[in-house]
Amino acid sequence: MAITALPPDTDADIARVTEALAMITPRWNVRILLALSGPPLRYSELAAKVSWLQNGQLHSKLRALCDAGLVERTEHTARHVTYGHTERGVALLPVLPMVVTWAEEHLEKAERPLAAIEQIEDSLTLLTRRHAAAILWVLKLRKEVSGRVLARIVMPSSDWTNIYPPLRQLVADGLVDTEGVGMPYRLSAAGDGLGPVLGTLSAWSAGQPLGQAARHPVWGQPQAKSAQRPWVSSPSRPAPAALPPARTLGTSPAWHHRDLFSHATTSHSKAAIPAGGPRR
Image (cartoon, rainbow, N blue to C red; front, side):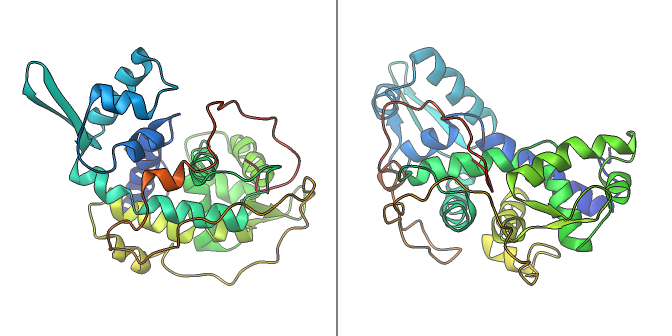
């Protein structure tokens, strides 16, 4: 069933991207996928790599990732079971460095250098806001749209004023700009910069080579950058430590899970979100 008033193919594409994000955004999922980079691991070996997770948590996370088709469980004997990436899971890994690249350029700077894995988790949280994919799509396609028109496209079966909570959230997150109440909405530089990430997720979710992202009908067409918003940012901080170099789509990953866990600590509690944006 259609979720927007966009053409069926577009509607299906947005639904696939939203579903792809829902697979990887839940807490710890990306870390588990990265921990499984390389040869398949026995449960105890994987548990040692994600030691902050309790057994019950890891079991449920692995079951969800297997159900999503990203991880496969292989029973060699009754006492020898291993976990590893499916082909689908391997194909998803190249998207992660692209998320890091976007985060380094656009996310609000934190008070301490962040590991790339934390950059990924913060970025995915922004992308999985309710209706975010559809709103970003329409704004990329239409350039500027009023809230009422946006509501008719994104949530045609709902009261049009319901568009404002997700819009306000995207403005607060720094992905959408507006001059004020009653004025049109448009992508910010950060929202526009998500094109390669969302285009690649679209290609992956459709089972296409990631190189097809450049020919995506919307996200594959770069838009002139809008002026950077004068963010009210938190105090400046040292630049993050060097990250693995960006690589060409379609090649094998040039980084390893240990690269994305650099600077990670055993404590994973989130600090309060400071003012500014795009916010973590």
